[in-house]
Structure formats: structure tokens, C-alpha cells
Image 1 (tube, one colour):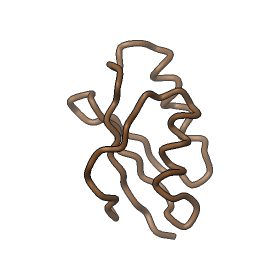
Image 2 (cartoon, helix red, strand yellow; image 1 turned 180 degrees about the vertical axis):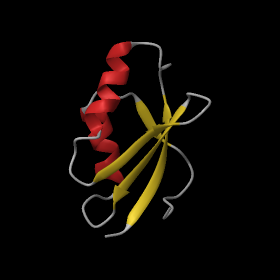
Image 3 (tube, rainbow, N blue to C red; image 1 turned 60 degrees about the horizontal axis):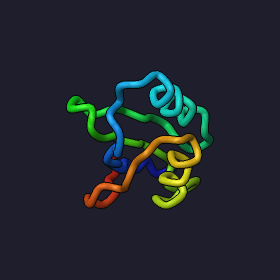
Image 4 (tube, rainbow, N blue to C red; image 1 turned 90 degrees about the vertical axis):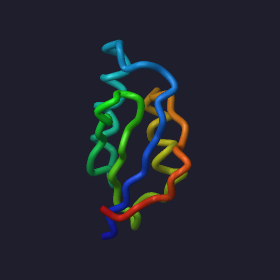
Length: 79
């Protein structure tokens, strides 16, 4: 197992319950360990198992859950 973190920039403010529920659903996806909202509430940090998901699949999980994000310019890092 290789833990990797990715940062995604939110395209919408975290001011509605529906968006928070969408983020909460991502926790149930196999291979996703953590979804953290950054203190400035403008991005998400996703920690996942790189032996189960690649960066595009991790991004796809968020899109399928209805979370409006784009991948940040920083490369994946191991926590």
C-alpha cells in the first residue's frame, strides 16, 4: 500500500449542505482514506492508496460524487 495525497481546488464555495454531503460520500470509496478541507475552505486534500487508484481515478471519484474540483498544479506526494 502506498499512501498518496492530492490537492484539488474547489470550483464552488463550501456553503451548501449538498456539497458537503457529496464530499462525505467520497469517504466510502474503496482506496480513499481521507478527504480533508483545507483551512481556507478553497481546496481539498485527498489521501488515497496508489495501489488501488491513480490520480485520474481519484479525480473521477470526486466528479462522480458531484464535487466541482480541478486538480491543483502540485504533484502527488506521499504523506
